[in-house]
Image (cartoon, rainbow, N blue to C red):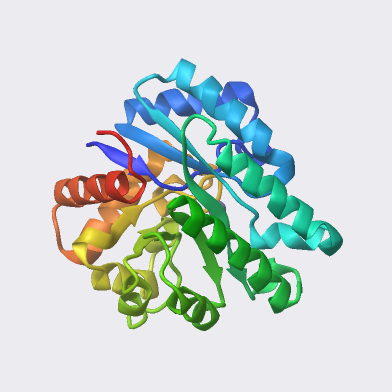
Length: 271
Ligand SMILES: [Zn+2]
């Protein structure tokens, strides 16, 4: 099965050291993963992320390692608000330098849950708007994080057109899916779908039009149920594909084919 992991933080120290990342890359290749997108979350880690992608390209040449750079709402509590504009200028410079393998802007978004660390919503919105402006200027898609902030996110998405972007690890309702997709955007599903008794993500996965459906592991978080207590990695993506297939009543092969084609289209990846 040919699958694309559209969201895996394999550069994070929590994922493992360099040797462990390289083993995971080889396991991903063996599991049929043809491409992995590594999203950046904070300025401090961008350079290391690009290095990691280059390193993994060497060890697992059949997997295409793509990158994205952004500022995650969950790191804002650790960043001095006085430095936001400098950080966004640095983001602008990095994106426009177009490092090898860069396919998107993000991870960025809104988090009004505990993960947002009590950062004022206006600050989150301002930082997200800067990512939106950069996406409009470059035509690159966004990798969007949205937790407990679906109404606010929808309002921003509806304000002005954006390049077709990706709602990662969708946690909204099935009813909201068409609204999130109306601007041309796609919806990606992760491990929550595999948990026993999962209902909301199952209904949501059923509600997404076939041409907007994507898969991700969100490694090292969200380990699929059958792989626990291991930490998550791209090789486990097939579990997500099977859960999405079960939710939609489709053969897993069809889900693999559709989501791989969608990932290539949304992220403009070579076949
Ligand atoms: Zn993420």
